[in-house]
Picture 1 (cartoon, rainbow, N blue to C red):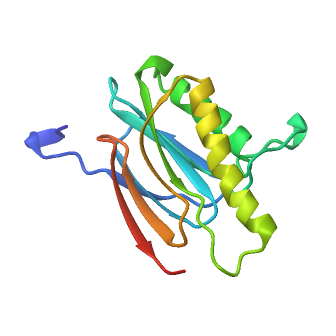
Picture 2: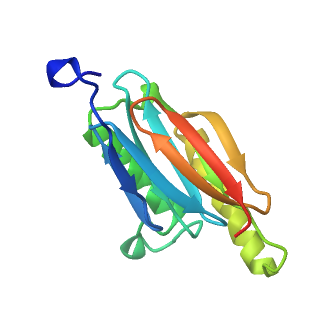
Length: 160
């Protein structure tokens, strides 16, 4: 992409906080940090736009309590934002990151991390969106950078 005077368009930088969703038509570099939380990155290979969510709990059962902190709500919200930008589901591909656990995590915390990943996979399968990359589980924190215009991702792993 080029801007005025044939200069490259500089992407905007965005830090994605937990329990939020980001999708924009303008090229962006989105940064987020994940441990047991999960982020799903969607990319429209035709329009070359992308979006991402960051959720910390797998699901909510009561519709009136649905917020992006829950995987099922965050996935629906991200799809809606992508469609609002003009994408078509058939052109979307996904990447999944997060779901790590630490040795000092309780059984319940480990289960939440695994379920977060499972919710993302299940939703994408149901929506028939191809997962092209996944880096989940383990015991390292992930610092993830996502280029919404190219679908390029950089993952840096470290001890929390």
